[in-house]
Image (tube, rainbow, N blue to C red; front, side, top):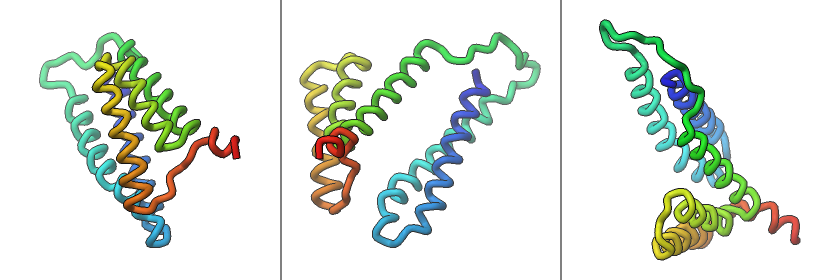
Length: 150
């Protein structure tokens, strides 16, 4: 189990390092979002990788073997929700799809109240639309459905 956690942390760290490296070659106007997302994510992924590596070493006298489980049911549910979230953003875009995905995850996965769910969806919409699109002037992905309708 620990080896899977370490592999996932290493993969995420590698993805973010490559993302930041590629983003540094973009024109000045285009590199803001990849760097704003990539640099903190790279630092957090590096920190997580170092934690996983230190936890994967057995203590003195500790048996390193044991039953190997590929994925627990909780991890499977988490990956399913991540896939759902990704598909919602691809289908509905960052603004609409992201807000709907946040609401669905809060209500059906985390079991939050409708009040918290609606607040979370509204907050996701405000951050994506008002902060990124309006205030920063960024053009966010509008989703496959919007492109298909046009």
